[in-house]
Length: 130
Image 1 (cartoon, rainbow, N blue to C red):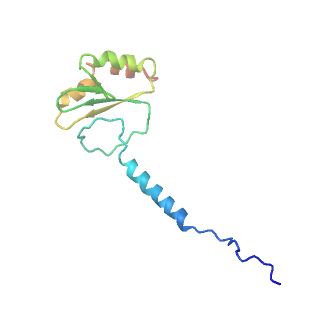
Image 2 (cartoon, helix red, strand yellow; image 1 turned 30 degrees about the vertical axis):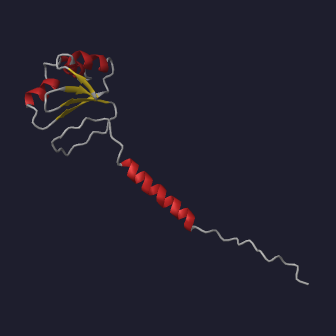
Image 3 (tube, one colour; image 1 turned 135 degrees about the horizontal axis):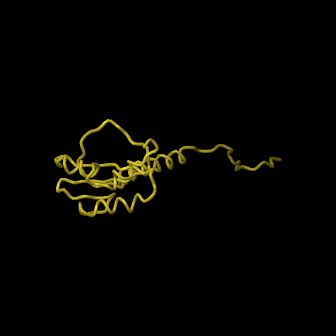
């Protein structure tokens, strides 16, 4: 008498369905990662070779229409200095990243960091060597 069951459960695992799901997830994340935008304005920047590693920085951007931005907030040139002073406060570890679009007169870009803007110069004159 044959008492064994006819339907045996196979202990094998089919990996093809799992690889299909992993492949679809890979394609999904590759497509969605290209649509993520950073916290930056749409500026055509000149090419540079240097890199900044600090995440404690303030981006001052100037577009070709000579409009000033702190991060993504539009600000007038006259309000730039008080706004920088209020942002920096007593924190001396922050850095200013100046982003000027191609075609911006160099005088406008330099006016952010030279002696005319005392916010920047007063923060960096008080270092440990003076």
